[in-house]
Amino acid sequence: MWGKNTDNNWENKREERTLECLSEAINRLCRYAEHEDQNILLFQDMINEKQRFHQVKRSYAHIYSRIKEHQEMLRILEAPAYIDSELSTNIQCADWVAALIGRACDYQLVLNSSYRWVADSFFADLRGGFTYESTLQFYRRSIGNIHHIRILDRARPHLDSLTGMSPQNLSLLQLVHARASAPTTGKPAT
Picture 1 (cartoon, rainbow, N blue to C red):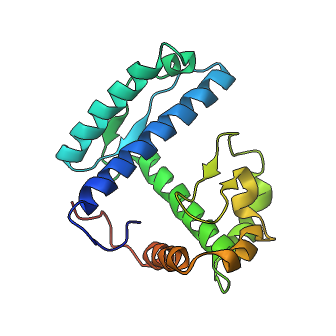
Picture 2: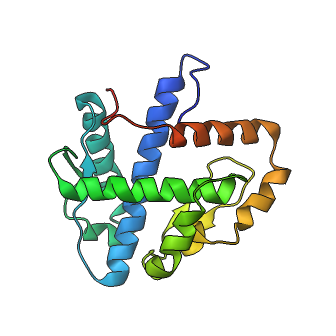
């Protein structure tokens, strides 16, 4: 979620942050593949052609720039491929997982959340299903990161840390919550 456009560089900042997240996701997936002694292919939901071009270009540069010092990067067989989620049930499944994690975040961070059922329903079944690289990072925020299965923790340990959050960060978190909770009507506009 990206808040309101407050300056002329907003779109560039959003795009740069997206590319940083993609690079970090590739790093983590390659480390996991190395740990499991497996090779991987990555698939992403299709986006507009301009963004796809930049992401593929950045992915190749990132992978090749790290191979010499990080041999786990050899586990990725190709830069991420882009496919349309409307045509692929695997990408639709990833959308469902993302929706589940979004609701789990709501439960962890919103006092009167209506999503307790996520923790109640999935904690036991998903225990052991998160990689050692699974982390929900709160980028430049005063709240600590959430690691592994803790996103489904019924105790909600991060809720207590919100009382020490700056008003600006609390406002941004509330914006993220509002956007994540808003109903979607299919594919986002490009």
